[in-house]
Length: 368
Ligand code: G6P
Image (cartoon, rainbow, N blue to C red; front, top):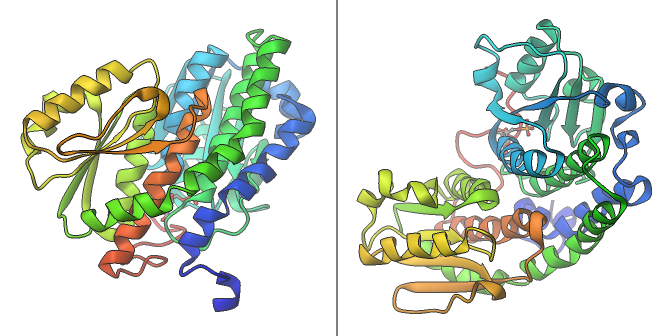
């Protein structure tokens, strides 16, 4: 294994650092075709033409990729979008809609609950099925009419990293394609979105360069029992993903909340022993996040804020700030996924857990 790992200590660390390459590879076909149904296979032009809504189904980290996409699909493509955990969807009476696009997201393409959710959708007569998957010819893409393969390469670490960020690329490409088919994307806007994609691997590399600062924070987290992650809007799913990564590999209990919901419960938990991580780039909700931060500080909570230069956050008593790369607009969740992965990785390292094979978890869950 040491040869495969090169300079890295774990597959997870290697996979985190492979992200600029994984993203560039996944973006490549989008650069060639632009936002086009051709990205999703030979049947996609016909199947996507009259889509009226989108239902995303997935588990774990893949579900959080879906939650991020909801913001894009509604804002850019103008289509209603729901996201549901596959194991819930498969057991409820869902309303069938032949013009709804069913999108399953699965790194492995073998997750049983996601596969069963897809079969259930098909049994309801839903024929517009698209799989976003990292493993060619696995079960879920084979059962779908359309497919987009992420090009992350083999992911070995149980906790998903590069698969997640490449899934976001696939979902951004889907959003652009649906927007175009829906008459909501002119040439200029498409060119701007493609340019954002082109620059993304560089911004992700800049985020990776924050590793020394994030490691210093991780060492402060290692002795803690609990942590809270906050985000709003597009960055709320990144808060969820950050909390999931931390629980999965460091076994620190972590929860994520949309920052506006703080006052409806989790604020009761905040004291000096509860570190609070905030994903706070300069977006439309920044001022609101800042007032949420005041609420935490007033209760003695120690804050760890990821903010870009435009957010104008400065360090103060109990408020630590790491400056994330230049704001990349709608793709910002991809860049902000990086520091929360690194935080979890180094917290786990400090605790000495089995990073690549955390207790009780499996890479691919093919049982119920
Ligand atoms: C397991 C893995 C997670 C993954 C989830 C969904 O829980 O440990 O990392 O996000 O399954 O897997 P999938 O292959 O369907 O994306």
